[in-house]
Length: 309
Ligand SMILES: *Cc1c(COP(=O)(O)O)cnc(C)c1O
Image (cartoon, rainbow, N blue to C red; front, side):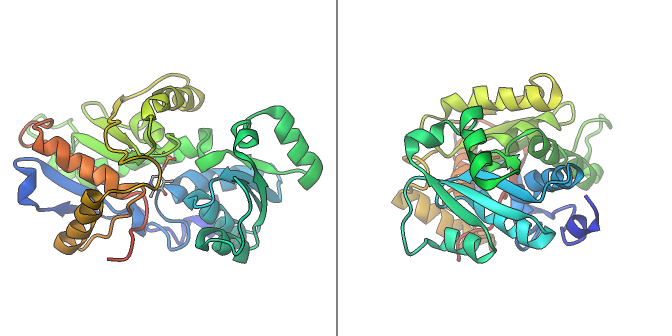
C-alpha cells in the first residue's frame, strides 16, 4: 500500500514487559497492537492493510463486508473506507435496530451503508448466490469476508512474529539462533489472526489461540482452512485453548470483570472484555496451572483497544 496507509501506523507496535507475582516464573510481554493506529487499531489494521492495497490494485471503489452489530471489523472497515477513499457497505447479522448502537452509528457516520440479513441468511455469507444478489443490488465491490479474515488478512498478521524477533533480539539464549520468546497468545474470533501469527512464527516458538465464542472447537478447522489458503499448508506449532469463552461472545462474568479491572489498575493497560480480557485471563490461569515451564517467555498480543479503566 502507498504511504497513505503505512505512515500513520506505529510499526513495530511496542513490546512491554508486565511484572506480576501471580505469574510465578513465567515472563509476560504485551505486544501493544492496540496502539498501532488510532482508527484502525490492532489486528484490524494488520488484516486490512493488504486488502486495501489489493482492492486498489484491482481498481475497486467499494468494499463490502460482513459482521455482527457490535463488530470491531465493521467499524474498522468503515474508518478505512473514509480514510482511503473507498465506499463501504456493511452486511450486518440480524435485524435492524434504531437508534443504531454506538458501533453501527460510528460506521454510518463514516459513510458506511448498512444492510441486514437474518441469522439464517447470514450463515450463507460465502455462498456465491448470495454474493451475486449483493452485486445485483450494490454493484461491483471488493469482498472482505467477515473479520477481514482471508489470504491478505492472514498474511498481514503473519508479519507480527518478525517484529517480535527483532524486538527481542537482545534476549536470545546461549543457543544464538533461538527467538527471544517462546509462546505468542492471542484472542480468536474468526481465527484469521492466529492463522497468520502461527504461520509467521520462527522455529522454536509456538502460538496459543483463545476462542471467545462458545464451542470454539470448530475454529481449528477454520484456522487450518485459512492457513492452507494463505500458505498452501497448515503451518506453525499452534493450539487452541477453548475453556475461556466465559459463556460466549460478548458474555462476561463477575470474575472476568474483576480480573480486567484489577489488571488495568496494576499495569495501566486497559483490556477489553470481549477479546483481550478473556485471553489474558487464560494466560494467567495457564500459568497458575503450571502449563508453562519456569522461565517461559510468553507474549500476549493486545489485539485491540481496551474498555475505559
Ligand atoms: C476482531 C478482534 C479479534 C479477533 O480476531 P480474529 O482474526 O477474527 O480471530 C481479537 N481481538 C480483538 C480486539 C478484535 O477486535
